[in-house]
Image (cartoon, rainbow, N blue to C red; front, side, top):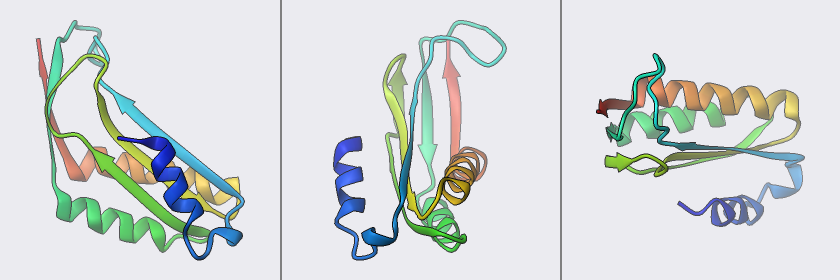
Amino acid sequence: MDLSKMIQTLKEHPDYPKMGMIASHLGVVRETSLNGDKVSGIEVVFDEDVLDAIVLKIRQLPGIVDVLVETSGGRLEVGDEIMTVVVGGDTREHVFPALIEAVDMIKREGASKKEIR
Protein backbone atom coordinates (compact mmCIF):
# COMPACT_ATOMS: atom_id res chain seq x y z
CA MET A 1 0.00 0.00 0.00
CA ASP A 2 1.32 3.37 -0.99
CA LEU A 3 -0.70 6.20 0.52
CA SER A 4 1.30 8.85 -1.34
CA LYS A 5 0.56 7.12 -4.66
CA MET A 6 -3.15 6.91 -3.80
CA ILE A 7 -3.25 10.63 -3.00
CA GLN A 8 -1.38 11.37 -6.24
CA THR A 9 -4.01 9.33 -8.12
CA LEU A 10 -6.72 11.56 -6.65
CA LYS A 11 -4.75 14.66 -7.65
CA GLU A 12 -4.76 13.37 -11.24
CA HIS A 13 -8.55 12.90 -11.22
CA PRO A 14 -10.26 15.12 -13.82
CA ASP A 15 -12.46 16.60 -11.06
CA TYR A 16 -9.55 17.33 -8.72
CA PRO A 17 -10.27 21.09 -8.90
CA LYS A 18 -13.59 20.35 -7.14
CA MET A 19 -11.75 18.75 -4.19
CA GLY A 20 -11.09 20.80 -1.11
CA MET A 21 -10.07 17.86 1.02
CA ILE A 22 -8.52 14.42 0.88
CA ALA A 23 -8.80 12.22 3.97
CA SER A 24 -7.30 8.80 4.58
CA HIS A 25 -7.43 5.78 6.83
CA LEU A 26 -4.55 3.34 7.27
CA GLY A 27 -5.48 0.29 9.33
CA VAL A 28 -2.69 -1.77 10.87
CA VAL A 29 -2.62 -4.95 12.93
CA ARG A 30 -2.31 -4.13 16.64
CA GLU A 31 -0.97 -6.46 19.33
CA THR A 32 -4.19 -6.64 21.35
CA SER A 33 -7.76 -7.57 20.51
CA LEU A 34 -10.64 -5.24 21.36
CA ASN A 35 -11.07 -7.09 24.66
CA GLY A 36 -7.38 -6.65 25.53
CA ASP A 37 -6.10 -10.17 24.74
CA LYS A 38 -2.64 -10.45 23.15
CA VAL A 39 -2.58 -11.50 19.49
CA SER A 40 0.32 -12.33 17.21
CA GLY A 41 -1.58 -11.36 14.07
CA ILE A 42 -4.76 -11.84 12.10
CA GLU A 43 -6.06 -13.69 9.08
CA VAL A 44 -8.28 -11.50 6.94
CA VAL A 45 -10.26 -12.09 3.76
CA PHE A 46 -11.76 -9.28 1.69
CA ASP A 47 -14.69 -9.73 -0.70
CA GLU A 48 -13.70 -7.69 -3.77
CA ASP A 49 -17.25 -7.54 -5.13
CA VAL A 50 -18.52 -6.11 -1.85
CA LEU A 51 -15.63 -3.64 -1.75
CA ASP A 52 -16.48 -2.46 -5.27
CA ALA A 53 -20.12 -1.96 -4.28
CA ILE A 54 -19.13 0.01 -1.19
CA VAL A 55 -16.84 2.28 -3.21
CA LEU A 56 -19.64 2.93 -5.71
CA LYS A 57 -22.05 3.77 -2.89
CA ILE A 58 -19.64 6.16 -1.16
CA ARG A 59 -18.85 7.90 -4.46
CA GLN A 60 -22.56 8.75 -4.74
CA LEU A 61 -22.61 10.68 -1.46
CA PRO A 62 -22.94 14.48 -1.66
CA GLY A 63 -19.65 16.26 -2.32
CA ILE A 64 -17.58 13.11 -2.86
CA VAL A 65 -15.39 13.06 -5.96
CA ASP A 66 -13.59 9.73 -5.60
CA VAL A 67 -12.82 6.86 -3.24
CA LEU A 68 -9.83 4.53 -3.41
CA VAL A 69 -9.34 1.33 -1.39
CA GLU A 70 -6.33 -0.98 -1.13
CA THR A 71 -6.30 -4.09 1.05
CA SER A 72 -3.92 -6.80 2.22
CA GLY A 73 -5.52 -10.17 2.73
CA GLY A 74 -4.24 -13.40 4.23
CA ARG A 75 -2.14 -13.82 7.34
CA LEU A 76 -0.84 -10.53 8.70
CA GLU A 77 1.49 -9.91 11.62
CA VAL A 78 1.38 -7.15 14.23
CA GLY A 79 2.31 -3.88 12.53
CA ASP A 80 1.31 -5.00 9.02
CA GLU A 81 -0.97 -2.76 6.99
CA ILE A 82 -4.48 -4.14 6.54
CA MET A 83 -6.36 -1.54 4.56
CA THR A 84 -6.00 1.96 3.17
CA VAL A 85 -9.01 4.09 2.24
CA VAL A 86 -8.68 7.52 0.64
CA VAL A 87 -11.64 9.82 0.04
CA GLY A 88 -11.53 13.06 -1.93
CA GLY A 89 -14.34 15.57 -1.90
CA ASP A 90 -15.40 19.15 -1.55
CA THR A 91 -15.49 19.84 2.21
CA ARG A 92 -14.66 18.15 5.51
CA GLU A 93 -18.38 18.05 6.34
CA HIS A 94 -18.77 15.61 3.43
CA VAL A 95 -15.37 13.88 3.35
CA PHE A 96 -14.94 12.85 7.01
CA PRO A 97 -18.37 11.17 7.30
CA ALA A 98 -17.84 9.44 3.93
CA LEU A 99 -14.46 8.11 5.07
CA ILE A 100 -15.92 6.81 8.33
CA GLU A 101 -18.86 5.21 6.53
CA ALA A 102 -16.57 3.56 3.97
CA VAL A 103 -14.26 2.09 6.64
CA ASP A 104 -17.18 0.92 8.79
CA MET A 105 -18.95 -0.72 5.84
CA ILE A 106 -15.79 -2.47 4.67
CA LYS A 107 -15.12 -3.85 8.14
CA ARG A 108 -18.76 -4.88 8.63
CA GLU A 109 -19.68 -6.17 5.15
CA GLY A 110 -16.55 -6.60 3.05
CA ALA A 111 -14.09 -8.32 5.33
CA SER A 112 -13.84 -11.22 7.71
CA LYS A 113 -11.00 -11.60 10.14
CA LYS A 114 -9.75 -14.10 12.66
CA GLU A 115 -7.31 -13.19 15.40
CA ILE A 116 -4.24 -15.38 15.83
CA ARG A 117 -3.08 -15.83 19.42
